[in-house]
Length: 164
Image 1: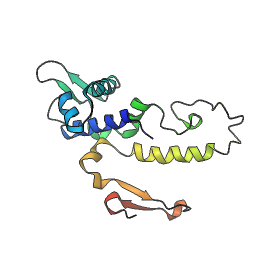
Image 2: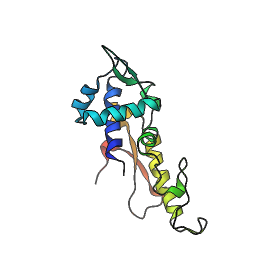
Image 3: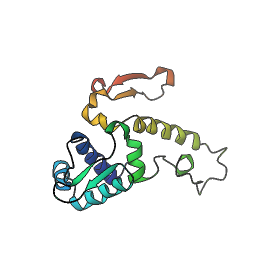
Image 4: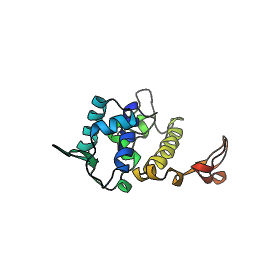
């Protein structure tokens, strides 16, 4: 599960994507538009700036703006900045690997292969979802998976056409 901080970061980046190319955006505007507490938002935007996703301008007409094209920023990058590891367990993390405390042998661990699949599924979505997705959410392609289905049975569908 992503944190509330990550959710706010994504919402703020959605606004900055909508305003991309129009100049700096005030924190108060983002805060009001997305109902994000201003002080919390300031800390989030500063963190994103410090990691090269945003840039800021001081003074009159200042604010925050995307440092790079929104098509080059994916959710995996944002989540790693804000929440750290994406992997469900530390032993399957690409960037933040740590051996699990309670695991005696990673080679024979029954849980590790499952957590690797969970990590890969999440990464597949996060890495292939850029900030541009916010401008056209219908373009997001997902895979419908029913319980017990095999990889060959999975069909691609548009989010707008998914049925329950």
